[in-house]
Length: 267
Image 1: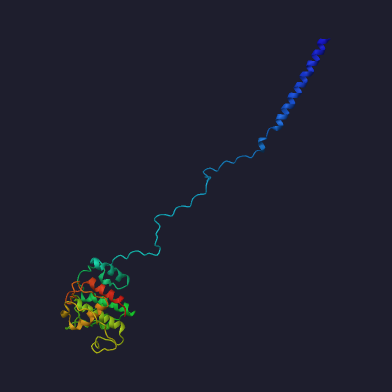
Image 2: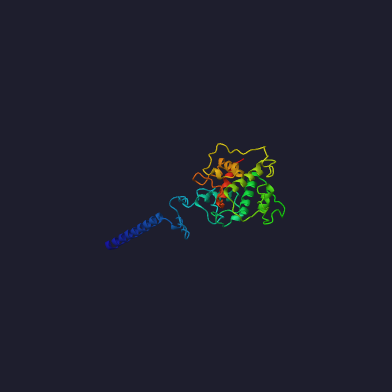
């Protein structure tokens, strides 16, 4: 009898123990987090960079031009020149005072009469703001060059003693000065002509207070006022030894430089 009672109690205790274990499992299960409720981490797009800091602005390129308004250097239209003349020759190009006849030329060589006529026309047109017109065909028997005919119409040239122009002869420095001053007179002196040059009094050339050149006595009378007028204007400066060299041949670069300086000297 006692044995049966003990077995019954043991069975009840085991049953109670089983219920307790089941309750504990339920309690643990209730505290676990449902993974379906967690936010799902989105994978990064392939190849996409996620910056940690704000990117720095790109650096200014070191080869960026600093002078936006600058222009390219003007290439020389001539061939060869002396070092002293290069800047003035290029300036003459920029000012429209450089004749096309000098394209590719050696500017150190003596200038011819026909070449100087082209410079004289350019100078007149720059000073006056007018376009020169030419004399009629047949004015000279040895040339029909348009610049020579324009110079004749303006009174800058009148030919040689034989009536011809002699276009390919070289021109001396005092004759070059005379032709430049005639271009000035044609541009600025109303009523002036080569015919009335000796009697024209409405305007005069200011050539006073200029130191005489060492070879002053070699300057011809017809060129005297022109040489010293250009000297006072800074258009001619002599040969560096106190002499003008009136009978020496004028070079192409000297002729262009004289015309350019004369143009800048104003009215």
